Amino acid sequence: MARPGFPPAGAVARRPGAPGPPAAAGRPGGNLPGVSVDVEVVREANDEVTAAMRRLLPQLSTSAAEPDQAAVQRIVGSEATTLLAATLDGQIVGFLALAMFPIPTGFRAWIEDVIVDEAARGRGIGEVLTRKALDLAEMAGARTVDLTSRPSREAAGRLYERVGFAPRSTRIYRYTFGQTA
Image 1 (cartoon, one colour):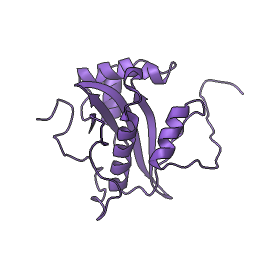
Image 2: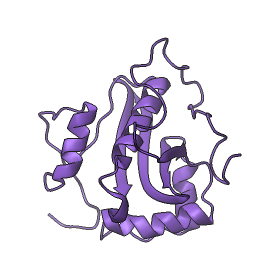
Image 3: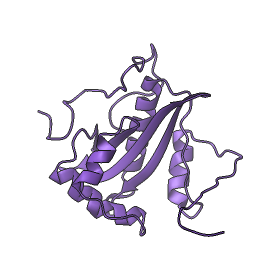
């Protein structure tokens, strides 16, 4: 039985018009051995999802605004964003946002805002979230998946490299509205 806001077990989210799964997917589905966490696509910004987002987001960013249910629904309802939730012992302990979008050079995918509750870290939850995001991006037709991680987040960097991400030689630029040069 599906939990409110989540798809039925075994359901796979696909963007409209996205191709089906490739003939030979490179990674097995499901959890990692020894990790008893469920990862599902969030379909609805219900009270449980919103409360978990409000509880976990400060562990990722001290400057992000506390989201209300409407803000979480904008994320969940976005055509470009797939929000994944990791549940351990019936409680949401992590989120990952997978952004996928077409641009002139191809169909792109980015992993953003990976959050795992401090109390649940070290159990492979971030890896399960990341692998699920990679599977979804591959099924949707992305050739690559990008992400950024601060150098100070050493454990996250090790996780991403273990999963198969490689550092790129690039510069990241940010424009912040409301600031003068």
